[in-house]
Amino acid sequence: MNKIKIPAYGKINLFLDIKNLRDDGYHNLEMVLQTIKLHDNIMISARRKGINISTNSKEIPTDENNLAHKAATVVLERAEINKGVNIHIEKNIPVAAGLAGGSTDAAAVIKGLNKLFALDYSYENLHKLAAGIGSDVPFCLKGGTAFASKRGEQLEYLPSLKKKWVILIKPPKIVSTKEIYQLYDEMKVDKNIPVKKLLAIIKKRKEINIKDGWANVLEPVTKKIVKDVAVIESKLFDYGFDFTMMTGSGPTVFSLIDQDEIEKAKQVIDNWERDQDFITLTQTFK
Image (cartoon, rainbow, N blue to C red; front, side):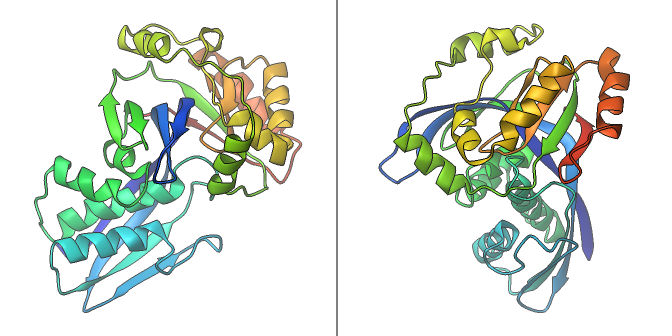
C-alpha cells in the first residue's frame, strides 16, 4: 500500500462536566461525546525520511505543533519505521472550534499509519498511543457515542443515539482551550449536571430532551470572552431549537434537530445574517 485516504470525523459534547483539577495540571472530566459527519480528509503516503504536512488551510501549523505531526512521530518511533510520511490535511472542520478538529486529524493519522505500514496494532495499543497525544484523540479513533472520563481518555461506549440533524455555528473569534480552563478555575460556575441520569437516558435509548439537564459547564466561561456565543444561542432558541448548547471549550454552538425540522433548519442557514459565522448542517454519526 503506497497511499491511503482516511476521513477524520468531528465531535460534539452532549454534556461536559468538570470534577476537579489534577496534580498534572489537567482536569478530571465527565462528558458524553458524539461523532458528527462533518469531517476532514487525511491523505498519507510514505517518503524516504521526515514528516511533511501540507494543508488547504492557512489556520493550522504544518510543523511539530500540529497534532497530526505529533501522532506520526509517535507511531513511527514506536514501530521503529525508518521512513517518513507525507500527510495532507484537507480541512473542513473549523479550527479551534470545540469540534476536535486537531484531535480527529491525529487519530486519523494513527489509524492511517497502522494500515499503511501493516502494523496490525490492536485497538488497545492504538488507544494507548492516542492517549499520549491529546485528550480527545482516543475517542476520535473509534467515534460513536461515548462517556469519557478522567482527562477524556477513559471511554465507555454507549448505545447510538437516534440519528439527529445538527446545526453548527461558529463565530469568528478564536479561543484558547487552556485559557478557558484557567478562567473556569477562577470562576465559580454553578452548574450541577445530573450525569447518572443523563447516562441512564442514553443507555435506555430514551429520547433526549434539554430539560433533563444536558449542559456544558464551560459555556458561561466562554461567554465571558465570546459574547457571540450567547447571541447565537438566543437566535437558535428563538427559532424553536430547544436542544441548543456550546460544544467543548467553544465557541461553536450547536442545535440537535429532528427530521421534521429539516426544512426550517435549511431556511435558518440560508437566511443567517451573520456573514462571518461558519454555519452548516450535518448529522450525528455511528
